[in-house]
Structures are given as structure tokens and as C-alpha cells.
Image (tube, rainbow, N blue to C red; front, side, top):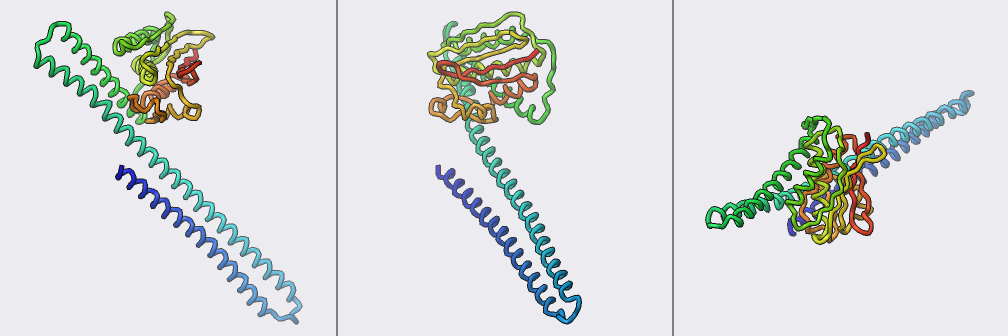
Length: 326
């Protein structure tokens, strides 16, 4: 709490110094313009005084000096305006970059806190189960239950590591996508079955059309589907159901995952696809997650030239739909 307050106070001081310096630079530029323009006016006055009125070209020389003064003033205005625009453009760019970096740093800090919790939980459960098996003599049923629980936690840890690794590879351009004809029906069924085993207390209702094929990467598609189902389970009450619909109509393949949770506010509907972003309402604060699932699913959809849509699930909840166009 104290460290966070200290950082906030320090950032405010930095931004205050930034705006003071920017104001000083702009004020100095305006002052130099006024000073140069005044000096120009005095020089023209001095040269005017040197002219002799009896000279036939007196009025012509006066006009020339006035033209020189106007030209100099226009030059100062043009140069000053150019410098001012460059300074303001640079200031806005720096301000937005710093603000973005601070936001990114804050998101990464939240991500590290979330990932630490997400990693420690399956590791702790797995360790406890193995120690129990090692130290106690259990009957066959108890052993199988502990082993099944350990496998589930290991799969959860593996999925988490896959998400982090894939996010890094996609951003670095290091993931080589393998496009082939995939039985998408089989992939969705496997994902549903996996989630049914991992969350036996949840009611998962699936309607999956047969013989639906897409051209894509099997691993990426599997991760994308799992992320959508996991997201629906995490952000909806345990007593509610999660609905999965895979169908092909009008030359489009649609995969919809619906939950009956609190839903997502309209102002957050686009933000939830950003990296590390997590909805901030009270209903979702206790949900586990790292903010990578929907971000990765969006990237996977883009890799397969598909579109991911987010709409409200009437009467309550959210509906995520991936649309593959043939």
C-alpha cells in the first residue's frame, strides 16, 4: 500500500515537472518571438530615421523598409509556429508514450501477480497429492481420485504454460503456423469432454454439428476453443450452465460459447480482447485468470482469417462467437 502510494506520488511529481518544463519552453518561444519582432521594428525605425526627406526616392525607400519589416515579421511567425508545432507534437508523443508505458507496466505487474497465483495453486495441489500418496496407505478408490485430481491440475498448468509461450511466440513472430484441413467437430468435442472432466460439477450443454472442417492449425484452434470455454466457466456462477454451439450455415462456420454470468459492460466489450486486460467489476474480481485467454483467442482467430464477436446473452451473460468464412 505504501509502495503503491509512493509510486503514485512520484509519478505525479514527474508529470508536474514535465508540464512545467513544457510551459517554460512554450513561454520562452513566445518571448523570443516578441523580442525579435520588437528588435526588427526598432531596426526599421532606425533605418527610417537615416533617410533624407528631400531625397526623391524617400517614399519608395519607406515602402521598401515597411515591406522588409512585414517580411521579417512573417518569417518570425512562420518559424515560431513551426517550432511550436514540433514542440507540441513531440510533447504529445512523449506524453502518450510514457502514459502507455506506465499502463503497460501496471498491466504487467497485475499479470505477474495473477500468474504467480495461477502457477502456485496447481503446483501446491500436485505436491500435496503426491505427498499424500507417498506417506499414506490409501485404498484404490482414494488413490485414483488423488491421481485424477493431480492430472487435472497438471493439465491446467500445461494449458497456462502453453498460453504464455504462445503469446510470446506470436508477438515475436516466432510461431510457425501449420495450415491443414482439420476436423473442427472433433476438436470442439475433445475440448468439451476435457472441460467436463475438469469441471464435473458444472453443467456444460453442447450442440455440435458433425463433419465440420476448417483449414487451420490444430494446436491453435484447440487452445482457442479451450480458452473460450474456460472463460465462460470462470466468469459464471457454478449453478449456471455453459452452452456451446457449433454449426455451419450460409457458408459460415460459427462456434458460440455462452455463459449465464453477470455479462460485460458495453464500454469494456472491446477492452476484454486486450493483452492482460481483465474486467474490473466486483463479480469478476475473485475469478482466476491472467488476461491472456481472450487476447490469444483473438490472435488465433486473426491467424485463421476468422472474426470473434462478443454480444450479450439474453437474459444475462455473455456470448463469444468465432465466425469462419468459407
